[in-house]
Image (cartoon, rainbow, N blue to C red; front, side, top):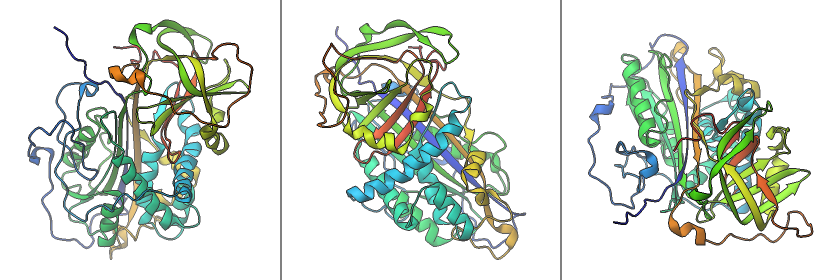
Length: 481
């Protein structure tokens, strides 16, 4: 009997959590205690229709035990109470440039720090930018000035934050049967602490970030478990934990959590039968055999002074993976600059012989970004005695003022060759200008058999959803099937 294969997608997940602590013991103004929802309080939902997608501001039902690669549809979740998110209004060209400048500027600044000493790494510039943009709305004085500069929010930070919120809603609206993208935010706040109503209303409306009261003061570990459970639900078990043991204490007052979940299949799929072991040369010169996917097809491509660029579109051509392959023996790290990113739209299509290893990047623990963000220029937000977050809360007792105690980030990316059977028939969109003029001597070769950089990019704005480097595809269970 013939068994129909389910569509297989390429998942990428990132989550960021920013935790706020107080300067001193909890002794400030309180509001009436609310019941803190625990994971066991959630009533299971009936199975959703096959084409259901998560509401951007809701917590979905936990997925079944099956691996996420076999998930046909995204569970539907009940809507959260609170103000309805603003409508997703398309961005104009100038607005798109503001959004891309903010996210991609942060990507370029963070990448050297996150890549330093790492063999394989991945992070979500969009996820980090969205979470910190929400936070910066509540900052004041020099704290706000530093955060706005690090986030590349330009001369009008309020407008930039509003545009980032609109972009998030547009990203969530881009979900289809073939490409699924969800960006989710949530505020977990101490139930006895008084937060500024304007801040909670603004984050709910602009970033679909509902407020959930928890008992950090009396039960920090159950509160941490609740936040990690939300993470697991939103990422379909790809990220089991974002807050490590000991990260939530009795003086924690607010956690802003952001999750980015992406699954998409190639517009032109690789055939699994063509995958075979081939050598990959690590940065230290050692070699390892890895499963190398192979296909010759039309792709946007360029060879610039020995650095090769390849654009692998996902179905629907709204998102693409760009692979940057430097000459053998050279690092891909210097390539990530604003000028190089702007040139991606000018690549032209041609037939290319592609070899790309399967890989998986799945770090065992989240990365704490405090030192990275301080080094980029926002130390005041982390300074207990200096942080100014009166836009989030303005307690009468100075000891109750807020500062950022932790910023954690974790990303998961897996790339393989599989997709639905119809994917191979999809045409590649052609570009008219750019690229390199040369006489035809057969298809150029793009053999990613040494360390390379990859970007998952939204084509409409150029915004970078994920950035990563692969230095050893055999590490992190990349070859497991």
